[in-house]
Image (cartoon, rainbow, N blue to C red; front, side, top):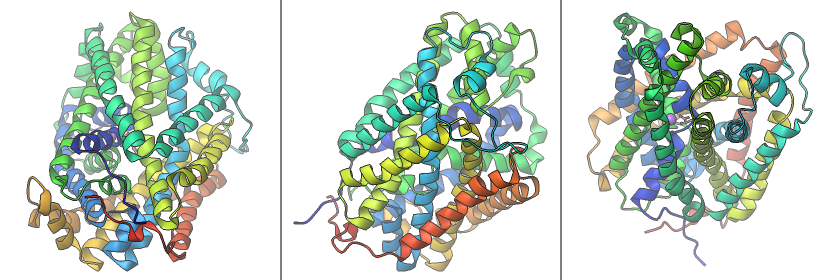
Length: 505
Ligand code: PHE
Ligand code: NA
């Protein structure tokens, strides 16, 4: 019989699922710091310009590819042009890499939601996190070898997170993926709103907000500030590496993709702004409690979430509740993003092989899970996580987006086709401006981002880790993804595969 591609039940499901992907750890622990470091209040200008000239346009580009060509990235790009399949597989490979370490952060956040009840970290949040909880051995630095010795209290929650992820994915687009966001995102918004309102009442909040927003107008003439703005927008919107292509492939034919794109873009940025307000209010409180300046307590990433925040939680009124709200938000935001990353890989393999969803989840999800648990669940996990992240997120995502826009606009010359696809049912028309942004502005911006990052990593290595570690997990993982992309492109499509599947109405 004829098989019909899965689809979202409606517009609300699509928008909330896309927001679920976009709103992630980057909004909570990356944006506040990037804003602070790059001109404070003045940073909002380059940020908004980056959103409008690159973020939304490439979000619409992804939607156009996925919606018009109705497939996972390899299938959609192959339908766009027979020579374009490899772009899709490269994006799939990057998602595979990210999925391996992103799951671990969700598992840590989930554990810390529980630890919050007793403030298990005592009065040394840093020592607790790295030494006691992760049992991190610092492997990979200064001649220390890497080890995969299993850490039970990290490994078991990680196994549980993987089991839950694969279950949701196996259930399907409508009843699994979309349902997680339809329930999870409203819960996240409410929890996070309470948290931000609470942070604003803390003593010292005003000093924190001053430190964050006091504009440094001189920053606007600094090129790196603009580069940071574009970098944040790419990462934050989950654009350019297959996620939004995959989700848009589950839209019904008569869907307003442009209108949804605007909603998703602005919702993600609003969440970021809210997070910055909450985080810096809390950091202002921390500075006051530690009797020091806000500059002294500012951090991002793992340090902010697992060192600074536990300290804040211990010092603040209603500790347990605040801890549950903060780490619960982190867990939920991460979970919906991780689902989107995995679905890219699953839908691609499913399209190519013609396997059922269940079998694909078992094979593809199962292998990601095992690699993740072995590599990141061990005593050297942080080193591997940090290195793979630095290469997949910057060079991988940006490189994949660069190749995609360059080839589609200039080699395959499909911008008119994509614009027509968006315009067929969109609430506003895209035209010359959009095509110029994708074909000219984006390749230039992406090339600059890519050049800066690659040249820096060639000159400096990464994170003080040994050369062989950076070569293996950094450059090596990118090389592996590239080789795999070529091999998968050259391998045949299943004759009965989804390449011939009927579209949903
Ligand atoms: N967009 C997400 C965020 O801002 C990050 C993300 C990265 C999501 C990779 C999916 C994949 O946190
Ligand atoms: Na985001």
